Image (cartoon, rainbow, N blue to C red):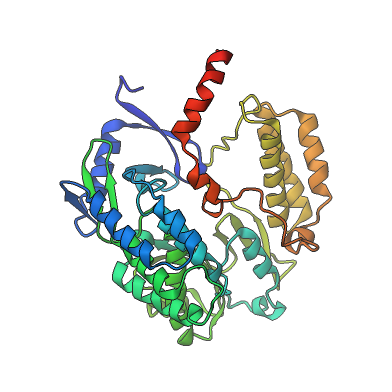
Amino acid sequence: MLANRYLVKMIDKNLGVAVMLIVWYENQCADLLSDDKMYILVNNIPTRHLQSELTAIIVTIKNKVVNKILTNSQSEILVFYGIPKVHKNLWKLYPIVLCHSWITTKAAKILDAHLVSHVNRYSWVINSTQDFITAIEELPDNILSTNNISLVSADGKGFYMNVDIDTMARCIEAILRGLLKHNQDEFLMMNEAVIILKYLNKNNYLVTNDGYQYHQKSGLAMGGPASGTIANLYLAFEEKAMFWNASPQMLFYRRYVNDIFMIFHASKPEVNRILAGISYGPLKLSLEVCNFKIMFLDTTMTKAAQLWNRLVTSLHQKARNTHSYVPWSSAHPGSMKTAWVEADMICRKMIYFNELVYNEALMVFIKQLVGGGYPRHVLAMLERDVTKHTHSSLLYPSGQDSSSAPLIIPAYYDNILYNVSTRQLERLLQPTVNDMQ
């Protein structure tokens, strides 16, 4: 492939892989980085200066655990690359920056852990499909009882990249002042969180595969540990002000990051007029307005004739989804492969309102897995386990122990991981590896 100047990359939204000309990929990356409002070419990245800035911040932080975590920050420069977006008619690249080992990474993880719980204070911001389906099924009967109802799905374009850093920082600071000023239980003080936020936003540097170095002077780093939470809070701040002047014709509103679903008691022209007068900060909305059927996230919603006062939900998949599942012959542990299959079955059970339609969709899913080598008896066992759950029990689980440990603990919650020297570990394990060989 390389000899013929082709490149193979994973596709956005996990739709499979794409084969492209290397020259096309390089030109797309160059086009993204040529935006002088977003990026500026630099001769060198001021690593020492950034480390000195972080050291000065560490001195001011009172929490000793946070202080120690930040002291051990790494300095591996961020790498820029693009993910192909092929579910649109015109292929393009989505800019991503690897932020796992940069000077600001641990500070970003600390800030994210500090802010993420506050996103839940905004009831219209959802965290999952389960949240959305639950909200849809709790809609009052009278909302959909009229013919003059419009279902609206809105997609925010380029939010991470177009947000003004200074405006966003002021909004987040206002939120922190309102929420955290008198809260002594937080592991970051309000002023400490604001200082870290400003430090993160002005120090996004990156390097391309061919060695060119850039400073991202606008927007949030796509791939930054705190970018999603910061964007969520910033837009929630804008929305809170918007709701004061919202039209009474807006009956329902939910948002997942930059994807928005609304229900209006208005015609399509009226909806367009209402939304034209609403400001979402830097977010430019692409609207789809329908009366009968609409898609949002991985859900299709339909106003069924026999259930005139509610929306019937089913699974939505992109038209170009190749259904590329991990084959049974892969080296992954069997427990891992069965776990994700069961999770996918449960997801379908939760989304499909109609049991008959769910069963039909499940048969299609099982057929695809059998084609990938999955044993029928294993799939039958998983299907029996999932059948024990009802649609309602998945949406409204009871008896959960909130104190139980999560399946995976993020590294920034486990301070031991920050003190492990991988090179020392490699030297210690080398004799064992040699014996095995």
